[in-house]
Image 1 (cartoon, rainbow over the protein chains, first blue to last red):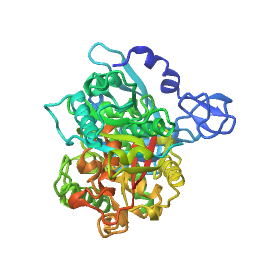
Image 2: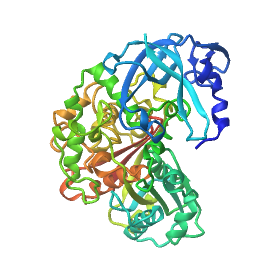
Image 3: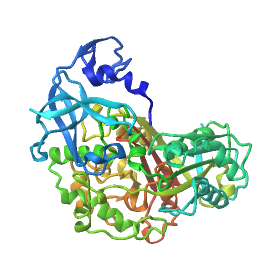
Length: 129
Length: 382
């Protein structure tokens, strides 16, 4: 399993939804030196509002061990209102209410914990709005 | 650049190979390929493997494999591009021969997947670890999201999607190396356990142990070794976004389209020229999208075409005569090499009951992750 610094350095986007807006207009939640769709290297930090919509989704029935106790759970590709794309679990919902285009809001949640004595990892999940 | 040919091939049976370790299966395939080519010494070698470390706790495969095939001293390198590691190994060997740096080069792929407990975790390391796997998405989950997007956009039904594994299992019946050489019906697909909605277990390629190897040499020397060399006529490789969510359209795989275009351009051929194709059907939906990106069917049409029998013997083009990843098995790093071996056997008329008639040009398409990388080979018997 990975050690704590790997998680610590991801805190800005996972805890606070800090993203980058490149001068070309593209928005990336992932930290990048270069825009993935242009050669633009200049960006400023923005904070995502956390609202967006589902582009596609699935219900995971077979998971990696770290998530096995949570099955079945929903995962979706989400586009935020600022245009950032991300993958997140969709929680506190009836699976039947999930649909492409559904509005969601990102919330701060526990993601995993590293065994009995490891650190607890937090991040974003989505809820239907 | 010199022209390059395949002069020998070898592979293990694909399946649960409990009596052999990772070095044993690589050595078996490599030694078979060397014997098949009639070579005792090679000038250089490549090992395509996704994760010797996580699957078998063994890195440094370049040295292990050279040692265990009796070739200590040769330069050797392990190459990795997730599930496209095998195709990437052949491309590396091709470049080394084409450049004139070496004459006889071994390209082998291997994966020993049954020795590990949390295989779902290992496979997910080929996705975006920080932005996808961290949040609990699995590989079947990523392809399930592609399937849902495709079914929504093009009105593909769940039953039509099931036509892919049903077809590939039917082909595998005639492949003695296949992991699951038995037929599957609609009830078998829809009734199998749910993995990631809408994909069931029978939409997903299996966990497989296996290795495959080919020997490359300059085309000018090839007939000294064999009467039936197969020329590598075109190669295209490309990368795409590591994360599915960064695909502009989740029903497309840009890396496959770009790799295909490069291979067609190098070979000076078009989709209509290709006699059969081995594609990377890691999940049922993948075969559909890949066939569209390679130009065999228009966007939105491949799923229904496969369901209508257009991708099997007697149809428009035979797709996955080997049984594909689904039924032949998918030892990740070996898959790209095994696809090229199927092309070799078809083009040299050695494919037995699964022989495609009048096979002039074969294509192998090998893909990493959710379209993060792709290698396409076009082959021709000479």
